[in-house]
Image (cartoon, rainbow, N blue to C red; front, side, top):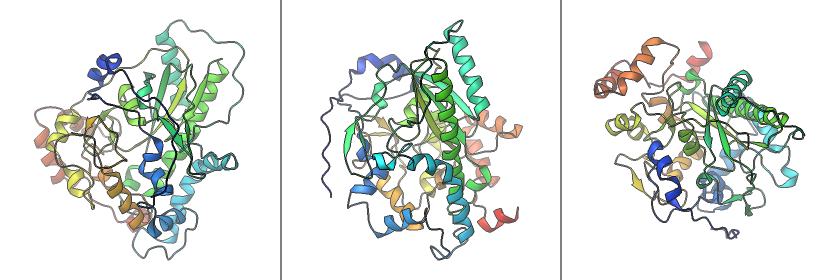
Length: 400
Protein backbone atom coordinates (compact mmCIF):
# COMPACT_ATOMS: atom_id res chain seq x y z
CA UNK A 1 0.00 0.00 0.00
CA UNK A 2 1.28 3.45 -0.90
CA UNK A 3 1.97 5.98 1.82
CA UNK A 4 -0.20 9.11 1.76
CA UNK A 5 0.56 12.09 3.96
CA UNK A 6 -2.62 13.72 5.25
CA UNK A 7 -2.72 17.32 6.57
CA UNK A 8 -3.46 17.53 10.27
CA UNK A 9 -7.10 18.52 10.64
CA UNK A 10 -9.11 18.59 13.85
CA UNK A 11 -12.15 16.62 12.73
CA UNK A 12 -13.78 16.24 16.12
CA UNK A 13 -17.36 17.50 16.19
CA UNK A 14 -19.37 18.41 19.32
CA UNK A 15 -22.31 16.08 18.68
CA UNK A 16 -24.63 17.86 21.12
CA UNK A 17 -24.90 20.64 18.53
CA UNK A 18 -26.70 18.25 16.21
CA UNK A 19 -28.92 16.16 18.51
CA UNK A 20 -32.21 17.62 17.27
CA UNK A 21 -31.18 17.54 13.61
CA UNK A 22 -30.02 13.92 13.92
CA UNK A 23 -33.28 12.94 15.60
CA UNK A 24 -35.27 14.40 12.71
CA UNK A 25 -33.05 12.76 10.09
CA UNK A 26 -32.88 9.39 11.86
CA UNK A 27 -29.06 9.53 12.17
CA UNK A 28 -27.19 7.57 14.84
CA UNK A 29 -23.90 9.43 15.18
CA UNK A 30 -21.83 8.04 18.06
CA UNK A 31 -19.09 9.33 20.33
CA UNK A 32 -15.69 9.33 18.69
CA UNK A 33 -17.10 10.49 15.33
CA UNK A 34 -14.58 12.05 12.95
CA UNK A 35 -15.11 13.53 9.51
CA UNK A 36 -14.31 11.19 6.64
CA UNK A 37 -11.06 11.45 4.68
CA UNK A 38 -11.69 11.63 0.94
CA UNK A 39 -8.59 9.52 0.26
CA UNK A 40 -10.35 6.59 1.97
CA UNK A 41 -13.24 6.58 -0.49
CA UNK A 42 -12.88 3.33 -2.44
CA UNK A 43 -12.77 5.17 -5.79
CA UNK A 44 -9.97 7.44 -4.59
CA UNK A 45 -8.18 4.37 -3.16
CA UNK A 46 -8.34 2.76 -6.59
CA UNK A 47 -5.81 5.40 -7.69
CA UNK A 48 -3.26 5.04 -4.88
CA UNK A 49 -3.89 1.90 -2.84
CA UNK A 50 -2.12 -1.20 -4.22
CA UNK A 51 -4.66 -3.44 -2.48
CA UNK A 52 -7.37 -1.97 -4.71
CA UNK A 53 -5.57 -0.95 -7.90
CA UNK A 54 -4.64 -3.85 -10.17
CA UNK A 55 -4.86 -4.96 -13.80
CA UNK A 56 -8.65 -5.25 -13.65
CA UNK A 57 -8.92 -1.74 -12.21
CA UNK A 58 -6.70 -0.34 -14.96
CA UNK A 59 -8.76 -2.07 -17.63
CA UNK A 60 -12.01 -0.82 -16.02
CA UNK A 61 -10.86 2.80 -16.27
CA UNK A 62 -9.50 2.27 -19.79
CA UNK A 63 -12.92 1.23 -21.06
CA UNK A 64 -14.12 4.79 -20.48
CA UNK A 65 -11.58 6.06 -23.01
CA UNK A 66 -11.32 3.20 -25.51
CA UNK A 67 -14.73 1.72 -26.40
CA UNK A 68 -13.24 -1.27 -28.20
CA UNK A 69 -15.31 -4.23 -29.34
CA UNK A 70 -13.15 -6.75 -27.51
CA UNK A 71 -13.43 -5.42 -23.94
CA UNK A 72 -15.94 -8.16 -23.17
CA UNK A 73 -17.91 -10.65 -25.24
CA UNK A 74 -21.42 -10.52 -23.78
CA UNK A 75 -24.79 -8.95 -24.46
CA UNK A 76 -24.65 -5.34 -23.25
CA UNK A 77 -20.87 -5.05 -23.61
CA UNK A 78 -20.52 -4.44 -27.35
CA UNK A 79 -18.69 -1.51 -28.87
CA UNK A 80 -21.95 0.38 -29.37
CA UNK A 81 -22.91 -0.21 -25.71
CA UNK A 82 -19.60 1.25 -24.55
CA UNK A 83 -19.90 4.00 -27.16
CA UNK A 84 -23.26 5.06 -25.73
CA UNK A 85 -22.08 4.84 -22.13
CA UNK A 86 -18.95 6.90 -22.76
CA UNK A 87 -20.88 9.48 -24.80
CA UNK A 88 -23.28 9.88 -21.88
CA UNK A 89 -20.30 10.66 -19.64
CA UNK A 90 -18.79 13.15 -22.10
CA UNK A 91 -20.20 16.42 -20.71
CA UNK A 92 -19.25 15.45 -17.16
CA UNK A 93 -15.78 14.45 -18.37
CA UNK A 94 -15.26 17.78 -20.12
CA UNK A 95 -15.77 19.67 -16.87
CA UNK A 96 -13.74 17.14 -14.87
CA UNK A 97 -10.73 17.45 -17.18
CA UNK A 98 -10.73 21.22 -17.73
CA UNK A 99 -8.24 21.89 -14.95
CA UNK A 100 -6.21 18.69 -14.69
CA UNK A 101 -3.10 20.76 -15.42
CA UNK A 102 -3.81 22.47 -12.07
CA UNK A 103 -4.13 19.07 -10.32
CA UNK A 104 -7.92 19.34 -10.14
CA UNK A 105 -10.51 16.75 -11.20
CA UNK A 106 -13.59 18.88 -10.70
CA UNK A 107 -16.79 17.13 -9.75
CA UNK A 108 -14.99 14.13 -8.23
CA UNK A 109 -11.92 15.31 -6.30
CA UNK A 110 -12.56 19.07 -6.33
CA UNK A 111 -15.58 21.36 -6.49
CA UNK A 112 -16.31 23.22 -9.71
CA UNK A 113 -14.51 26.54 -10.09
CA UNK A 114 -15.67 27.96 -13.44
CA UNK A 115 -17.89 30.97 -12.71
CA UNK A 116 -18.49 34.61 -13.48
CA UNK A 117 -17.73 36.97 -10.60
CA UNK A 118 -20.22 37.47 -7.78
CA UNK A 119 -22.46 40.50 -8.38
CA UNK A 120 -21.56 43.59 -6.37
CA UNK A 121 -25.12 44.12 -5.12
CA UNK A 122 -27.16 41.51 -3.30
CA UNK A 123 -30.75 40.75 -4.26
CA UNK A 124 -33.12 40.84 -1.30
CA UNK A 125 -36.20 38.64 -0.78
CA UNK A 126 -39.47 39.14 1.07
CA UNK A 127 -38.67 36.25 3.40
CA UNK A 128 -36.51 33.18 3.80
CA UNK A 129 -39.41 31.10 2.51
CA UNK A 130 -39.70 33.29 -0.60
CA UNK A 131 -35.98 32.86 -1.29
CA UNK A 132 -36.30 29.07 -1.00
CA UNK A 133 -39.35 28.97 -3.23
CA UNK A 134 -37.66 31.02 -5.94
CA UNK A 135 -34.47 28.96 -5.75
CA UNK A 136 -36.45 25.74 -6.21
CA UNK A 137 -38.41 27.18 -9.13
CA UNK A 138 -35.18 28.20 -10.86
CA UNK A 139 -33.54 24.84 -10.11
CA UNK A 140 -36.45 22.98 -11.70
CA UNK A 141 -36.29 25.32 -14.70
CA UNK A 142 -32.61 24.46 -15.12
CA UNK A 143 -33.52 20.76 -15.14
CA UNK A 144 -33.27 19.51 -11.53
CA UNK A 145 -35.63 16.58 -11.01
CA UNK A 146 -35.63 17.12 -7.24
CA UNK A 147 -34.26 19.89 -5.05
CA UNK A 148 -34.03 20.36 -1.29
CA UNK A 149 -32.31 22.79 1.07
CA UNK A 150 -30.54 22.11 4.35
CA UNK A 151 -28.46 24.11 6.76
CA UNK A 152 -24.74 23.52 6.35
CA UNK A 153 -23.56 20.59 8.48
CA UNK A 154 -19.76 20.48 8.63
CA UNK A 155 -19.73 16.83 9.74
CA UNK A 156 -20.41 15.57 6.24
CA UNK A 157 -17.64 17.54 4.53
CA UNK A 158 -14.40 15.64 3.91
CA UNK A 159 -11.78 16.27 6.57
CA UNK A 160 -9.29 16.65 3.71
CA UNK A 161 -9.56 16.41 -0.06
CA UNK A 162 -7.46 14.03 -2.13
CA UNK A 163 -5.97 14.40 -5.59
CA UNK A 164 -6.15 11.27 -7.74
CA UNK A 165 -3.42 12.57 -10.04
CA UNK A 166 -0.70 13.77 -7.68
CA UNK A 167 -1.66 11.42 -4.84
CA UNK A 168 -1.72 14.26 -2.33
CA UNK A 169 -4.19 15.10 0.39
CA UNK A 170 -4.96 18.75 1.04
CA UNK A 171 -7.27 20.87 3.16
CA UNK A 172 -10.91 21.11 2.17
CA UNK A 173 -11.87 24.51 0.77
CA UNK A 174 -15.58 24.88 1.51
CA UNK A 175 -16.26 28.64 1.48
CA UNK A 176 -16.08 29.72 5.16
CA UNK A 177 -19.22 31.82 4.80
CA UNK A 178 -21.35 28.81 3.79
CA UNK A 179 -24.65 28.62 5.68
CA UNK A 180 -26.78 26.35 3.47
CA UNK A 181 -26.45 23.44 1.07
CA UNK A 182 -28.81 22.98 -1.87
CA UNK A 183 -29.07 19.32 -2.84
CA UNK A 184 -30.32 18.36 -6.29
CA UNK A 185 -31.22 14.93 -7.66
CA UNK A 186 -31.17 13.87 -11.30
CA UNK A 187 -33.19 10.79 -12.20
CA UNK A 188 -31.48 8.02 -14.12
CA UNK A 189 -33.26 6.38 -17.06
CA UNK A 190 -35.56 3.60 -15.86
CA UNK A 191 -35.18 1.30 -18.87
CA UNK A 192 -31.40 1.64 -19.05
CA UNK A 193 -31.18 0.65 -15.38
CA UNK A 194 -33.28 -2.42 -16.19
CA UNK A 195 -30.35 -3.71 -18.33
CA UNK A 196 -27.97 -3.86 -15.35
CA UNK A 197 -25.36 -5.34 -15.30
CA UNK A 198 -24.12 -4.03 -18.66
CA UNK A 199 -21.97 -1.31 -20.14
CA UNK A 200 -25.20 -0.07 -21.71
CA UNK A 201 -26.73 0.58 -18.28
CA UNK A 202 -23.72 2.76 -17.46
CA UNK A 203 -25.17 5.32 -19.88
CA UNK A 204 -27.84 6.06 -17.25
CA UNK A 205 -25.11 6.83 -14.71
CA UNK A 206 -23.05 8.95 -17.09
CA UNK A 207 -26.03 10.94 -18.29
CA UNK A 208 -27.03 11.54 -14.67
CA UNK A 209 -23.62 13.02 -13.91
CA UNK A 210 -23.52 15.08 -17.10
CA UNK A 211 -26.93 16.56 -16.33
CA UNK A 212 -25.92 17.05 -12.71
CA UNK A 213 -22.86 19.09 -13.72
CA UNK A 214 -24.88 21.38 -15.99
CA UNK A 215 -27.69 21.93 -13.50
CA UNK A 216 -25.46 22.45 -10.44
CA UNK A 217 -23.21 24.93 -12.25
CA UNK A 218 -26.23 26.87 -13.56
CA UNK A 219 -27.79 27.11 -10.10
CA UNK A 220 -24.49 28.24 -8.57
CA UNK A 221 -24.02 30.95 -11.20
CA UNK A 222 -27.60 32.16 -10.71
CA UNK A 223 -26.95 32.60 -6.98
CA UNK A 224 -23.67 34.40 -7.70
CA UNK A 225 -25.56 36.71 -10.05
CA UNK A 226 -27.77 37.58 -7.06
CA UNK A 227 -24.69 38.69 -5.12
CA UNK A 228 -24.07 35.63 -2.95
CA UNK A 229 -21.33 33.00 -2.73
CA UNK A 230 -22.12 29.66 -4.38
CA UNK A 231 -19.95 26.66 -5.24
CA UNK A 232 -21.25 23.66 -7.21
CA UNK A 233 -20.21 20.14 -6.29
CA UNK A 234 -20.90 16.53 -7.29
CA UNK A 235 -19.00 13.65 -5.60
CA UNK A 236 -16.32 15.98 -4.24
CA UNK A 237 -16.14 18.07 -1.05
CA UNK A 238 -18.76 16.27 1.08
CA UNK A 239 -20.83 13.12 1.53
CA UNK A 240 -24.00 13.74 -0.48
CA UNK A 241 -26.44 11.25 1.06
CA UNK A 242 -26.55 12.66 4.63
CA UNK A 243 -27.07 16.16 3.21
CA UNK A 244 -29.80 14.90 0.88
CA UNK A 245 -31.60 13.26 3.81
CA UNK A 246 -31.37 16.46 5.84
CA UNK A 247 -32.69 18.38 2.81
CA UNK A 248 -35.80 16.21 2.68
CA UNK A 249 -35.10 14.36 -0.55
CA UNK A 250 -35.53 10.87 0.86
CA UNK A 251 -34.50 8.22 3.36
CA UNK A 252 -31.56 5.86 3.76
CA UNK A 253 -31.92 2.31 2.45
CA UNK A 254 -30.31 -1.06 3.13
CA UNK A 255 -28.38 -0.72 -0.14
CA UNK A 256 -26.55 2.32 1.25
CA UNK A 257 -28.35 4.67 -1.14
CA UNK A 258 -30.83 7.51 -0.88
CA UNK A 259 -34.40 6.27 -1.47
CA UNK A 260 -36.63 9.02 -2.88
CA UNK A 261 -40.40 9.12 -3.24
CA UNK A 262 -40.18 10.24 -6.87
CA UNK A 263 -37.57 7.85 -8.27
CA UNK A 264 -36.61 5.39 -5.54
CA UNK A 265 -32.81 4.93 -5.46
CA UNK A 266 -32.46 5.79 -9.18
CA UNK A 267 -30.84 9.24 -8.74
CA UNK A 268 -27.49 11.03 -8.93
CA UNK A 269 -26.90 13.82 -6.41
CA UNK A 270 -25.32 17.25 -6.67
CA UNK A 271 -24.71 19.98 -4.10
CA UNK A 272 -24.37 23.76 -4.07
CA UNK A 273 -22.70 25.39 -1.04
CA UNK A 274 -23.94 28.94 -0.51
CA UNK A 275 -24.51 31.79 1.93
CA UNK A 276 -27.86 32.74 0.37
CA UNK A 277 -30.29 33.08 3.32
CA UNK A 278 -33.11 30.55 2.84
CA UNK A 279 -35.63 28.44 4.70
CA UNK A 280 -34.33 24.91 5.12
CA UNK A 281 -36.44 21.84 4.42
CA UNK A 282 -37.14 19.09 6.94
CA UNK A 283 -36.30 15.39 6.59
CA UNK A 284 -39.11 13.19 5.30
CA UNK A 285 -40.31 9.75 6.37
CA UNK A 286 -42.38 7.40 4.23
CA UNK A 287 -41.54 4.04 5.76
CA UNK A 288 -38.25 3.09 4.08
CA UNK A 289 -36.47 1.80 7.18
CA UNK A 290 -39.37 -0.47 8.18
CA UNK A 291 -39.65 -1.76 4.61
CA UNK A 292 -35.91 -2.42 4.34
CA UNK A 293 -36.05 -4.30 7.63
CA UNK A 294 -38.30 -6.85 5.88
CA UNK A 295 -36.80 -6.62 2.39
CA UNK A 296 -33.41 -8.02 1.42
CA UNK A 297 -33.69 -8.08 -2.36
CA UNK A 298 -30.61 -5.89 -2.80
CA UNK A 299 -28.55 -7.99 -0.39
CA UNK A 300 -29.77 -11.26 -1.92
CA UNK A 301 -29.05 -10.03 -5.47
CA UNK A 302 -25.58 -8.57 -4.90
CA UNK A 303 -23.12 -10.90 -6.70
CA UNK A 304 -20.30 -10.26 -4.21
CA UNK A 305 -22.48 -9.99 -1.07
CA UNK A 306 -21.37 -6.43 -0.36
CA UNK A 307 -24.77 -5.42 1.08
CA UNK A 308 -25.63 -6.44 4.66
CA UNK A 309 -28.36 -8.93 5.51
CA UNK A 310 -28.38 -7.90 9.16
CA UNK A 311 -29.26 -4.88 11.26
CA UNK A 312 -27.41 -1.56 10.94
CA UNK A 313 -23.95 -1.63 12.49
CA UNK A 314 -21.32 0.88 13.60
CA UNK A 315 -18.04 1.19 11.75
CA UNK A 316 -18.38 -0.96 8.68
CA UNK A 317 -15.89 -3.36 7.11
CA UNK A 318 -12.77 -1.42 6.13
CA UNK A 319 -11.27 2.06 5.82
CA UNK A 320 -13.73 3.02 3.07
CA UNK A 321 -16.58 3.05 5.61
CA UNK A 322 -17.24 6.04 7.86
CA UNK A 323 -16.69 5.27 11.53
CA UNK A 324 -18.85 5.92 14.58
CA UNK A 325 -22.13 6.08 12.65
CA UNK A 326 -24.61 3.23 13.06
CA UNK A 327 -26.23 2.41 9.72
CA UNK A 328 -26.52 -0.17 6.96
CA UNK A 329 -23.06 -0.19 5.43
CA UNK A 330 -21.98 -1.49 2.03
CA UNK A 331 -18.55 -3.11 1.69
CA UNK A 332 -17.01 -0.76 -0.87
CA UNK A 333 -14.03 -3.01 -1.54
CA UNK A 334 -16.25 -5.93 -2.58
CA UNK A 335 -18.55 -3.65 -4.55
CA UNK A 336 -15.79 -1.99 -6.55
CA UNK A 337 -14.09 -5.33 -7.20
CA UNK A 338 -17.22 -6.41 -9.09
CA UNK A 339 -17.24 -3.19 -11.10
CA UNK A 340 -13.65 -3.78 -12.15
CA UNK A 341 -14.28 -7.45 -12.97
CA UNK A 342 -17.21 -6.73 -15.28
CA UNK A 343 -15.71 -3.64 -16.99
CA UNK A 344 -18.55 -1.29 -16.07
CA UNK A 345 -20.32 0.10 -13.03
CA UNK A 346 -22.97 -2.03 -11.34
CA UNK A 347 -26.45 -0.95 -10.25
CA UNK A 348 -28.05 -4.33 -9.54
CA UNK A 349 -29.10 -3.09 -6.10
CA UNK A 350 -30.95 -0.21 -7.80
CA UNK A 351 -32.58 -2.40 -10.45
CA UNK A 352 -34.03 -4.91 -7.95
CA UNK A 353 -35.06 -2.39 -5.28
CA UNK A 354 -38.88 -2.42 -4.89
CA UNK A 355 -38.73 1.38 -4.70
CA UNK A 356 -37.28 1.51 -8.22
CA UNK A 357 -40.46 2.21 -10.18
CA UNK A 358 -41.80 4.46 -12.92
CA UNK A 359 -43.77 6.84 -10.71
CA UNK A 360 -45.41 8.58 -13.63
CA UNK A 361 -47.92 5.69 -13.33
CA UNK A 362 -50.54 6.22 -10.62
CA UNK A 363 -50.55 2.60 -9.48
CA UNK A 364 -46.86 2.78 -8.62
CA UNK A 365 -47.49 5.95 -6.60
CA UNK A 366 -50.19 4.07 -4.72
CA UNK A 367 -47.79 1.16 -4.22
CA UNK A 368 -45.10 3.28 -2.55
CA UNK A 369 -47.70 4.62 -0.11
CA UNK A 370 -48.88 1.12 0.76
CA UNK A 371 -45.24 0.01 1.19
CA UNK A 372 -45.04 2.50 4.06
CA UNK A 373 -47.90 0.84 5.94
CA UNK A 374 -48.52 -2.50 7.67
CA UNK A 375 -49.11 -3.91 4.17
CA UNK A 376 -45.38 -3.70 3.40
CA UNK A 377 -44.86 -7.48 3.40
CA UNK A 378 -47.75 -7.94 0.99
CA UNK A 379 -46.34 -5.21 -1.25
CA UNK A 380 -42.95 -6.94 -1.20
CA UNK A 381 -44.58 -10.23 -2.23
CA UNK A 382 -46.54 -8.44 -4.96
CA UNK A 383 -43.39 -6.75 -6.26
CA UNK A 384 -41.77 -10.14 -6.82
CA UNK A 385 -44.97 -11.69 -8.19
CA UNK A 386 -45.36 -8.95 -10.82
CA UNK A 387 -41.76 -9.34 -11.97
CA UNK A 388 -40.39 -5.94 -11.00
CA UNK A 389 -36.62 -5.85 -10.86
CA UNK A 390 -36.08 -8.48 -13.55
CA UNK A 391 -33.26 -7.76 -15.98
CA UNK A 392 -34.03 -6.58 -19.48
CA UNK A 393 -31.63 -7.98 -22.07
CA UNK A 394 -29.53 -5.09 -23.39
CA UNK A 395 -30.15 -6.24 -26.97
CA UNK A 396 -33.88 -5.79 -26.29
CA UNK A 397 -33.29 -2.21 -25.18
CA UNK A 398 -31.84 -1.40 -28.59
CA UNK A 399 -34.92 -2.86 -30.29
CA UNK A 400 -37.53 -1.21 -28.05
